[in-house]
Image (cartoon, rainbow, N blue to C red; front, side, top):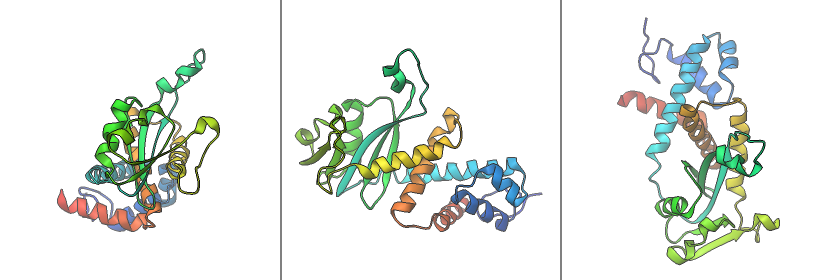
Length: 232
């Protein structure tokens, strides 16, 4: 039997039950615990969690063309190392490489990339960041051409020299906070399937942006899900 649900078509759950699942999802409670708390089948909860992540991904993709401006922090990070014991320097080769741009007091944007070369990173910065913006990066050589090509204000922090901030405003502390937040979240899953990884990455992006913008994630997600359900 199929019931009418405001947040997902062809769902066998009543709207009030689905709202509880959505709330627990927003509170970052694992699907197994949500299943026990609500006395709902684990497969059903897993299906809902995956559905919510897919909608969040589509929402983030819809907003990906938004141009960032003012003060922007730029950085790259590595996730889920496959350890190669005999060649430590090659550990990064087996990791998922993620590039991030963060507008202070605004939002973060992330993208999985193939490498961290200037050929890969500079076009993304050019596409996402307004010309008049102030850009803060670390000392990676991939960012060497930013001033020469497009941006007048480019400040760098040299981590290799134990330098983490130049004055109070020239730093990349916020984007590094995002990396820390995301890695802590993803470590809970003890491994994520490759085809699902981008969903979890965008979920972390969505959560962090709600926090940055002081938005109620639960209320925002209910609104997004309802709109999407009405459109499909």
